[in-house]
Length: 257
Image 1 (tube, rainbow, N blue to C red):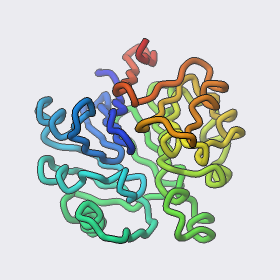
Image 2 (cartoon, one colour):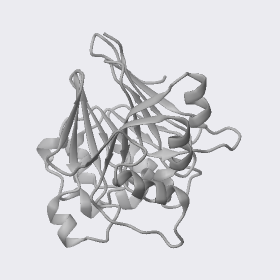
Image 3 (cartoon, helix red, strand yellow):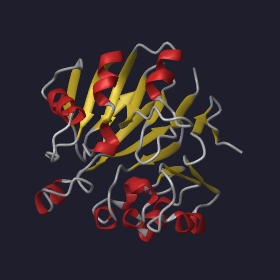
C-alpha cells in the first residue's frame, strides 16, 4: 500500500489541489495554471513527473479562478472521470476555459462525466469521497448562486476526514449537516480564506486539526486570524509555498513543520 498525498499548490488567486490515492489513481480538484515565476505551474510539474492521465477531475464550480488553464490541461493529459456541479453559469465575456468546461459536461475531452450533488459518492481504493453539496434546497432557493451550489468534497481515508468546500459562503454552510463534517482532520478554508466563507459554528463542528488557505496576497477580507483562533494545531497558506499533506500506512497524517 502507498501513502495518500494531497498537494495544495501555490497558484496565487485561485485553487488547485492534486491528490495521489494509495491505489495509484490520481485526482485533481479545480484547475489553476500559473506560469509566473515563483508559482506552481501544474502543467510543467505533471510533465516532469511523467504523469499522463488525471483519473479524476473534480471542478467545484466554473468560476475562472477554479478552471483557469483547463483548455491547456486537456491538451496535455488524458482525463478519466470528470465530476461537476449541476449549477449553470455563463461568464461575460465567455472565455476558452469555460467553453472547454461546457464541452466536458457533454462528455467531450474525458472518458466519463458525472453531474454530482449531495448524496453522491465515489470510492477510490480505500478512500471515499462524499459530495456534501450542492444540496437540492439551495439549488432551488439560490439557483444563480454559483459559490453556494458548487461541490463540497469530504475525502475519508484511513480514519481521517479532509474537507474541500470550494467557495461555499457562510449562509451556504448552514445547509451542510453537522454529522457529515464533525471531527475532521484537515479543512481547506472556503473561498480562499475570505471572511464570507467563514462559518464559526460549522468550523466548531469540524474541529479541524489543520487548516490550509489557498490564496494570493493578503487582503482586508482574509479570515486568517479567525482560523488561527480556532484550529487545534496549525494554519497553513499557499502564499509562500505549496502545502503537502500525507497519510501513511500507519494511518498517521503528516503536515509540514
